Length: 204
Image (tube, rainbow, N blue to C red; front, side, top):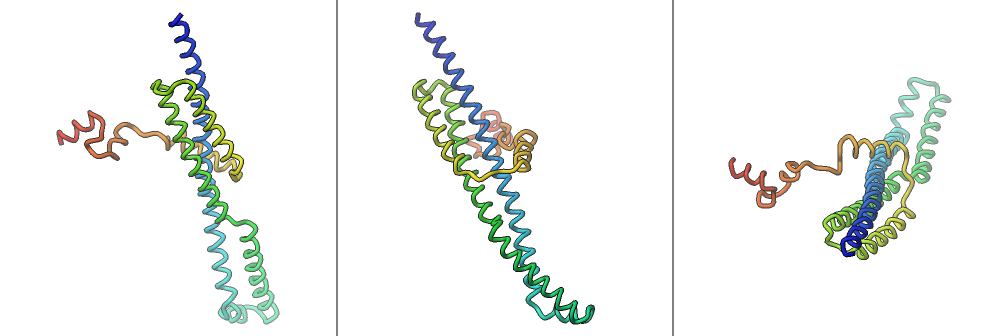
């Protein structure tokens, strides 16, 4: 009877572990997607600012009017100067409507929250696999993480397909979330490295 109960509990743990692992995968992708979206928004913000600064400098100086006066007649010179001034005004209004700087910050904040959630899911996976947490406690932890994920998703800004593709490339091809044993050892003091790496350092 005891062995049957043990087998049944093991099966439930396997199902719970599979569910938590899938949730971890979704969160990991969301975290990386928001990181990439923040990068894309920052690039747009930087281009927008440089373009605005350039047009402002050109339109505010007497150099432009003098230069245009040499190339064009007075009426065309005034028209081009007015057009550039109008472009600066439009870009100023556009920067308030499409605030890429603020959008960048929102995606970075969401990515930071997702990073913490991802690490919490990873810790729960370790606890379940090592059988160091009772089943009911694991279920309670899963439910708590689901509620936390719902709150973050509800307030998260939208991402684009381009950001998702960049996240997919980073996770699948460049393996951003994984490290070899040697890579981790090189980041740690000798005393905290794996046995083989400590021996190798000692031989050197």
